[in-house]
Length: 258
Length: 225
Image (cartoon, rainbow over all chains, first blue to last red):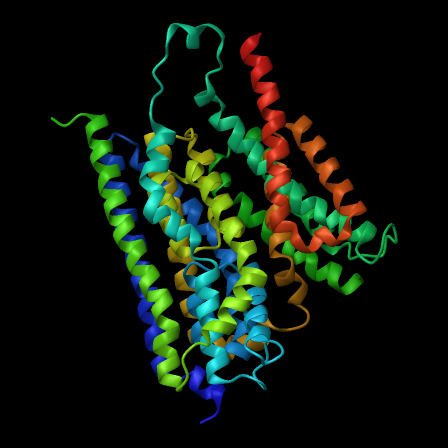
């Protein structure tokens, strides 16, 4: 039996499928508890249903992208392991990088099925799990203390009231700013790619990612205009997914041009 | 009758208890699986090679995970954080998804409503991903020619730019001045040091820090006036 057949064997599907099923059960338990508690706390069930609908529609397109990641990795690692990695804890941008580094360290040169050995595969699999587990470790050992500290109401003294800022009120602007920073890092990298991607100020890098972002932004502006001017609040649930779909369709067109 | 506060506190206690138990089990399963699979394949992982690779690339992800933890836990609340760290894909899906849900129903961070909304949002998006991936794996053979067709390839290569374009429109409107300064600064940085383009995920740290610093200056000015 060759290595790819072993990596796609029912035993591996069983191991990986069971762990994914466990993750799905955790999600269901958390969702049911949150919904029940939300209702008991007086949160409008209609609002919570809107959250569920919006999140489900939002997740469809990125999930198809993640599925493509599974397909891309399945040629060198078989299907079950990338399926597990990208369903649980993994991230699309992370998996290939770590798998490549592990393949080099395992002595097979790079991530390729032609050089894959059983030892190299199990080493790659271990490293893919190990490198990205720290968020889980931190949230297990420090999550309660950290989130309790964030939510604890501050007792104010007289001197606090006089000159100090109400830092709790800074939570929302800080989160918006963090998101502006996150988005800007990516958009700026597309600008940097065009201008200096192939050497300083050569202006020969790929323009497609920036053009796709621009189309998505325009589409989003259109959805926002409809919501605000036609009072169509329901459109919010589909605006991100719809903008992405329009931009991805434009990417197909740009691909033919560029 | 139980008050809203005590109900919420009881919910949070249960969330932490369950979250820690489930996360610990998942850690054991994920670290144990390579050894079980290695035994089946006839060769256990080479720990020396794994340590070497960890030193080359794992350190970057160790720092990245710590930063993600510090930044995202306040955004996601307790339940959302346990789920997000178990199911992954934070930047490209869970965080924007939770923020989108939060904005749609108009809740503020740090509130009990945000805790409930984040948990529902991340649980739902994780289940959708699990279902789509499971369906995709079942259909992987008939789907492969469609999904890997060269015509559709640019669409799937550009999922992330499409996502960030849409999010840019949404968030840049909220604070155009900060957005312009941060985007201009980061663009200049990437233009002058193009090698940084390969580490964009790490560049979120200075970009986010600059945005938060500028937001803080504005906030302080507003509070003082």
